[in-house]
Image (cartoon, rainbow, N blue to C red; front, side, top):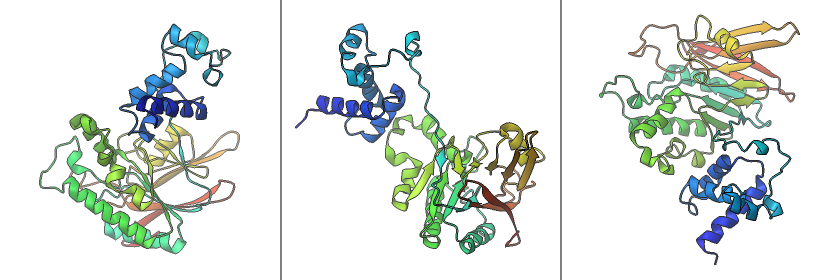
Length: 335
């Protein structure tokens, strides 16, 4: 049986061979997350990576560079500068697999302050269309009690929100048993992580306190998309909206998004249905969309507003091009 030191070394060597171009920081993060029973911390894994890459002093570097499998390419111009190691995480898009071509996009449900009056017709519409994927595009939960704003202690607590969200996910799985479910983090779910960072940092490395674990995404076969990740549905980019701008989105949220991105993009966040199209000098047409919400329309913090119920339905072509319907809901009917 291998001792702990040998096991750690063998694991690090195998990851170095498999991911030779990964930064030491990103590779350490991956190794630690996938082998928490072996490594005490991310830094423990990172120290071994640096050792085998010859980054722990001249003596160790001379020793390790004799091994061809870990020898760095001296022709790499970046190495000649001997710059400090980067600590930047690589931000990768979530790319929806090509087999999913009938996609419903629901944003801003804000459970438990949701509206069944809006949710039911949206789900009925997607069921009739035969949706094979539903993207929950942020702010599925409200996380009211974790807000930095003044709170009413009589409002629903987090346990109730988690239970209600679990019930909603079970409803989706029951009525769409073969449909791919994707859950993206919005600014309201970000409240959970911010609370953990500021109020309980000691628990951050415990998986049982992660939102995706509490909501049993693995058991429910739900894909998890982080707050900063963009979703690609064919050639359509999808964000919640908080990643780009705060506030209410101006007169036309879709135009605000166009001015910030100049990309074909769909967002939620603003609780308002809008679309904006412009054509460039070269003839390239770009359209941005914002979708309506599926939550209560008159919350205490903004009882009077310009919100509307709505969601989107996208059919993706083999080329990645798409047909998008930015739909509104009024008095239980979808328009």
